[in-house]
Amino acid sequence: MKRFLTFTLALATVGSVAVAQKSIPHAVRTLTEATNRRTEVVLPQIKGFNCYKCDFHIHTSYSDARVNPAGRVIEAWMDGLDVIAITDHYEGRSGERNFFKVINPYFEGQEPIKYQSANKAKTVKADFNAIHQEAVNQLEKSGYPMLLIKGCEMARNAETHGHFNALFLQDINGLYDEDLAVALRKVKDQGGIVVHNHPAWRRKTSDKTEFHQQVYGEGLIDGVEVANGVTFYPHIVRRCIDEKLAMFGNTDEHFMTAHRYGQAGIHRTMTIVLAKELTEKAIKDAILKRRTIAYSGGYLIGDEPWLVELLNASVDCRLTKVDKKTNEHIYMLTNHSSIPLRLRRGKTIFPLEPFKPLVVSIGKDKQGVEAAQPLFHVENMWVADYKHPKVVLEIDK
Ligand SMILES: [Zn+2]
Ligand SMILES: [Zn+2]
Image (cartoon, rainbow, N blue to C red; front, top):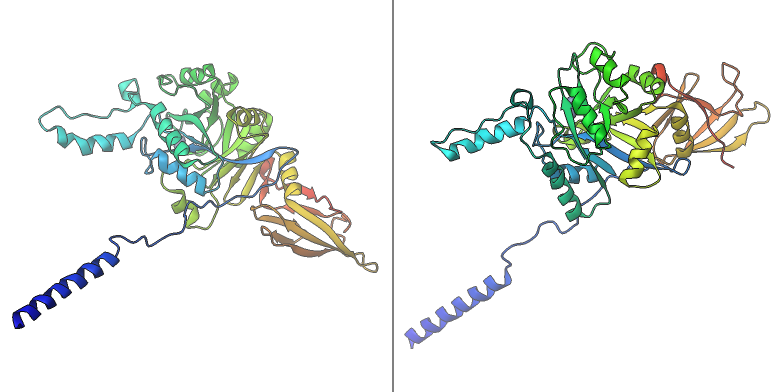
């Protein structure tokens, strides 16, 4: 009897353990919220054009950066961009060199594979179209409504030649030539455009070199980076206006944008392109017609007329009261864009934070501008010759 009891007890114990194990799941998801979140950069429509947020200069781990093409697509989406171009270095691909270092021991006893820079090997043995395709595949998988532009960066000595981005390419492979001017001509043959990158990088001037005189003179250059990362080149604004070139603001990102910009709580550097629609044709057309504004570290850099349009399209200015005795005018200013704007009248600064209306009371200013004319200097906008534009806000009825 005792033996029977023990047996029954043992059975019951095994049974309860089995029941308990069944009710505990093998794996539990600790996060059930969707995380594919984007920080939208809200910009107004300007004269029938949409403001597209673009970065035409980004590197991946295939040249000398630390993020792969798929990561760049996801990162750009999260940063609120609409258009990106992966522009890996045609020359100088340390990622490739590191890769061979890692895999060579695997082929023990065989001649180690050595990476050779294009300049030394006189050719490039990498498939740049495949790099672009990796980004395209990620974009298709993610379903983001973004546009990817095919491109690359060509680089020579910073003192004599500098770096140039080739964009809107058909076929990236085969563009290399020892003579950089020949390579740039090949870009044009494909219907591509050329941007002169970071013109004062590793130089004490942004003036043109002999090589620049040659390629600008030949009409091979379509635009220049007035801002690269968080560096602004003020002299280049005048050059772009005089020579009818588009102004660009690009990250030239080699690490993670979250590291450089997100942790500092600032937006990612970008080129705002004013185009009718999000197609390659419309974006390229807008660049060739110079409808671009660079946005870097809070600075808006561009042609004065477009900056004035951007300001008036972003800011709602309502006259709420006029003091009959003093003629003081009270306005309510609301910035409907994501870009903080910094207005100044006389010595007073009016910071227009996004979506935070500011009520301001203004009288006749020291230059005799009447209160009825809401004229401001826009401190974070930069036009030619290192100046801020003076803008009379349109009063909304
Ligand atoms: Zn460069
Ligand atoms: Zn670069």
